[in-house]
Length: 138
Image (cartoon, rainbow, N blue to C red; front, side, top):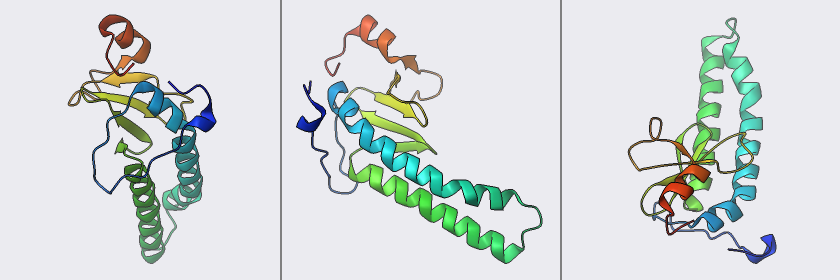
């Protein structure tokens, strides 16, 4: 575990290279993940409003959709460079070697865990999972 936030330096990994996190590493990376995600979310809000406008021309809608897609892809790319994945818009996973720590924007901290193929139905509170199974990464 890191005693001070300044003791942690985010690692950039080769694109697509898997990375396994301990809970301490994932928590230390959260301020950066939150900053990246909040910035992307802020960029998307005006586009979302424009796309909901039913009077928008087809050409304008296509431009807005392309811009929206580019912002989301940029967000996903930044996450991948840090070794984490996005399973859905604003849902971030940290691989632990046996499952995934899960965070959803705008939550302030990582609060759940699930096995690899059980994202929606197998989510457990992080505290409950640690108490029941005492995983090595905790």
